[in-house]
Image (cartoon, rainbow, N blue to C red):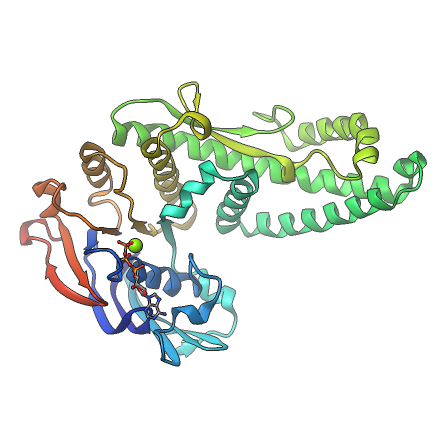
Length: 378
Ligand SMILES: Nc1ncnc2c1ncn2[C@@H]1O[C@H](COP(=O)(O)OP(=O)(O)OP(=O)(O)O)[C@@H](O)[C@H]1O
Ligand SMILES: [Mg+2]
């Protein structure tokens, strides 16, 4: 998938600009607060109709304006399509080739992007619910079934917890209604577990190699943390274990008035050899780990969607030494359309710079553009 050009009207600090992009690496550079992240954000909005850094849509509209527009021309499997998102103070609309798409889900499934932005580091540093949200969102993008079953699971979990809260005696644990809730919950949980194990395995298949390619050393892997070992188990086996665990834990659940095991309690951890990155990782190592995660998602995406997503990297170079910056660029070069923001291009090897399109931003406008050299153009 290639985004050939993006056009903004009254978006954040931009009034009217149109930027054409190369199908390889695009580097958006400039001083702080000039609009680099805003430009990247506009691509995210074009794909998903909302921002990754603001829940409030009208924040995207340029100060003192009423309406903001982002449009882009995208080529996918040889077909060129125009996408457009229009944001007004209280509503938004989206269009494909000028036709309004009323159902949001019909619009957002078209443009695939993988984004890295600085707040992603919280996936490592933050609380477990952030990591659970990360895996849930990623797997939902790949498989709508997962999304549906996750919603069922959450609904059943709430019913089961309510039932535990309202129980007046131990005998409530044996009540047919409560047993049925437990049984249904186990059905859904087993499916979620199986999908999560498959996803983590795929991430690990790619991550270790990517981390090594960019950092030059170190063995990186991701661990799924659960109350019991799930590797290589069938759904039926997972169900059996869950039944046993629920049975063992029921008096404790009664005491605590909540469901104590299940996918809603699990976590993932990130390891460099035998060091847990959350506790022992440097900023650079944590950044590298998240990057490897994102880059490995691209391969997984490819397998499912048969078309490469667009890679957006916001401020990814901070805290990476020059070798890793250049290794990263070498890794992605030529393989996938990438849009990177940075304040500094001086430390990037000339060989890589020549293959990239450089776009300098100053105060919400393009200050200069350096096209990809002819012999490297694709
Ligand atoms: N709705 C808006 N209307 C006008 N200007 C806005 C709006 N939202 C944000 N801005 C301005 O955009 C600028 C920030 O742009 P952006 O976050 O893209 O900076 P940046 O170039 O990525 O900087 P850094 O290098 O610090 O990350 C700020 O000056 C901010 O005031
Ligand atoms: Mg920025």
